[in-house]
Image (tube, rainbow, N blue to C red; front, side):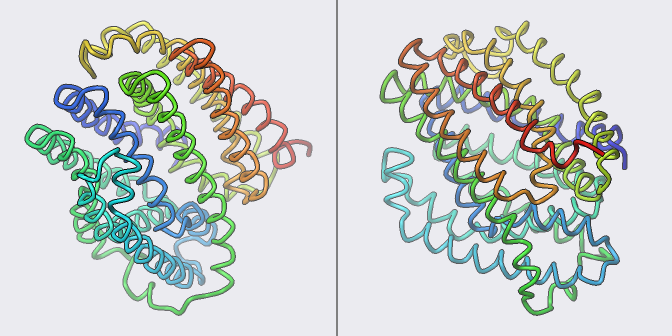
Length: 416
């Protein structure tokens, strides 16, 4: 599967996901408003944190080693068994913790104990989320992109119908309930689709826990936990700061522009996750690695730049389409947010080497450093310039990150 073919298939899945997200986001904007969108963002950041912990933070490692071993590899059953045991134990522990601290989590993240029942539901369903994502990570490593795309399309369509109906009838409660239950149904569909799979079969998950495989996955767990902790936590801190310093409507505007970035960049980031990680993991020759990276820049960066310029030119139409007139103040955020998006993707193309080559210490150090710098820059720029300072801090932070990535990964692709 080439980068171009993978990009086309991932674009199909992403286009459908974007369409579904469009409708869902419009429903949130109409029925809940800017403040409600900010609270949904708070819960999404919380779920990112606990989902990574519940998965044992190993999914990127599973993808890498499945790709490295190959579908007929002798260690595939050992890898599957070890990964599934880590995931199951972690999800049960995390799920129990969510249930026990549901009232506190509801008060802290959603500013009210009224939503504690949502956290209880999440605690009981999280194991289904975890197993579903483990199976998708295995499919990614096996490079079965068509199946991966089909599952994601089904998930998008189901989420569109289910989430929109719940938002219309239940408002914010409906949005939160949808977030903690939609993958439970998808998991059953995935099991049915994989029932005759030659590699993903029950007998390949029955081996005992293997310490060697566990140690290999632990390196990726450290990287995933760092990423899962730093990114959502930094966003939680920033969103709270905006809400308390400016207003919660302003926090909603920032959440909205971040949402736009995440949605359109999904076209590219999906390709990176399903093509680049397995591909870069396989390559050992530096010249071939440079060639693959250059190919990525030639194909992906023009797409990102064109999309960014188009979104800037259509910003007023996009605000009208995705949100409501209440979100008009966010238009000032577009320019430097989009500049930051271009810098972010330029950095990510090369930063994926840290995952592919298990550069654990470098990854952890840079993730912590640049999440911290984003928080500090955001606070400083917001104090100086108001809400538009968020866009400035985003662009500056990823400009610095891009420069650091070039030097941090040079040992893998530079020289002979």
